Image 1 (cartoon, one colour):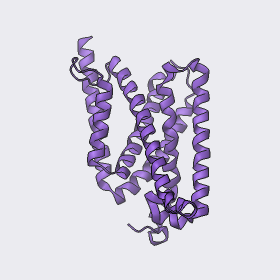
Image 2 (cartoon, helix red, strand yellow):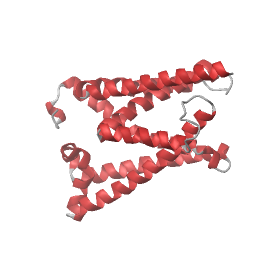
Image 3 (tube, one colour):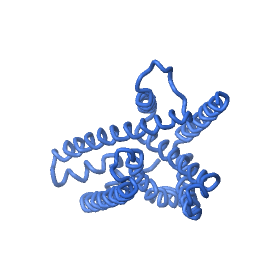
Length: 251
């Protein structure tokens, strides 16, 4: 695959033009960490919404600042050539050799903090699903099951996939789950929660607008990741169906 967009076929350039900003929009999904901590927030009816808005605004400001700094330092062509090391390349003209070290240090801190926050929120969500008997469990003698299961799956993904593949698979699964949740609101929960049905419909349309071109582009460049993501999604569906049926039989 060539680095320059000009060297790529027109359909692929169009897909990249659409998918690139859509990919960045997935950064905003971090606000789900806030919703998973709803029990720990004082006055959640008011403060959860405020926290989500503030987190999205902070993310938008940071992305604009990073984009402006990279553009001013190395430009779009330099960022495409540097790819994963664009920030380090952008820091070098100002900080020299220290630029790479500073960028790496910041990246390590950001990765660790994001990893800890994600493990905490996802394990709490998995614990809630276990309490609702909608997710499989380990033997009762095993303590801290949600954290062990979440961490174990993260380690497996890290061992067999690179960073780009993990991010791609995460994007697939996140968008698929969001579509499923929105469809569940339309199909089953709309009247119960007094939902405005046009909102989940718009959400599904936007998810598909991202997922379809993203899938086509990934299929052209890395079919293995598409196969792995599809297999993981199928495995999750099968295990949940088995768990739900086992719960139904015991009720």
